[in-house]
Length: 430
Image 1 (cartoon, helix red, strand yellow):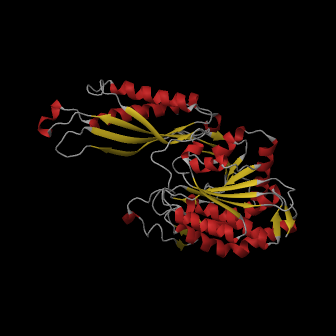
Image 2 (image 1 turned 45 degrees about the vertical axis):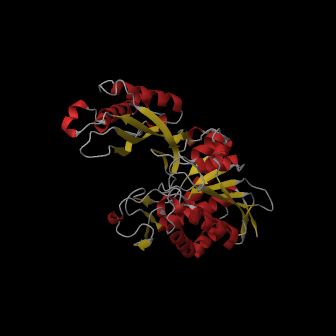
Image 3 (image 1 turned 60 degrees about the vertical axis):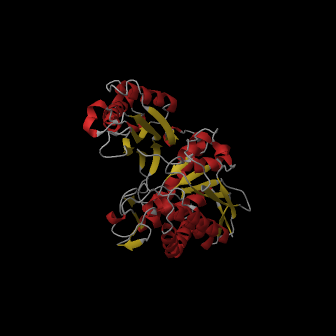
């Protein structure tokens, strides 16, 4: 790219950056946990409308997407699940189209007394913005939007169509991104600024969520030996699942992108409930599990292996031997995705464009990494034949207490994104 043009664009990012920080703060103040995203989506829709985009705001209908590849099963309905897409049409379609995707939903905050300051009252301290979702991933939504603002400020327009997506459900199913595909949104490439410290994600694991439901035999605790404790029964089953986790992490089972990572697939028992009364042997127990999987692994085969593992472990419990554990799948049923395996000309060119933009802004080579989490990139890469570049700012304590994002990193990512758009889509004088 011409040096004068790149300098012009980077200076324009600097000129709008104070507005970007203010926008990010206001967006982070919306408590957009799953089911509560509507006010944040209203805010996003208004911002897109104010910029002259065609705004599509719709409620996701599960019946529209349940038979599509990549669908994850849900519990309940989607009466409160709303996506927002802003479309910026090119007057002269000379370049390649682009999806700028980000998720508006955030994870629960946990005990408020363990935060230094309230999670939805964002604050800035020593160059970091604190707040739930500031890093994961509202800073990415802001960088996408203000990269476009910077181009406009520089007197430029993309020479290809841009689709700005603000989606729900990324943290539990990904069905928000899937609904965008069902809605017909397609482009030559997608950029998703998840907070991975200005590195390009070349592979991501898949994720499988499931619940294990156990029955017991209740009795007064004075006669506990005559009952069957459903909570105690969960312990050997959890241990068996961790043994399965160890087998999946063995070197001879690893995907090539993860050969250098000691323990890429993580099993987490994230929630457990059971029983009704401290002096009664509990008649029921339910625990929720998250398990990772490699790109290319078949989800149905893994489910069979999980269920076989639980059934084998249940044989050690006299009551469960005749009252088998029930496995319920809900939430993530996400395949892994490896951008590294996409050898198409389009993917090579998209990665090259991002590499050039990153190096111009930072003066360093673009780091490439395999991550042990999942993102919405899989929908574009696996089901829409669209290379999905995951590249975003540095953040810390995502999903934890005192989540924060590095504002200098946000600035650099915004500059990189603006240069990438200019290269990938092309630009014309406004």
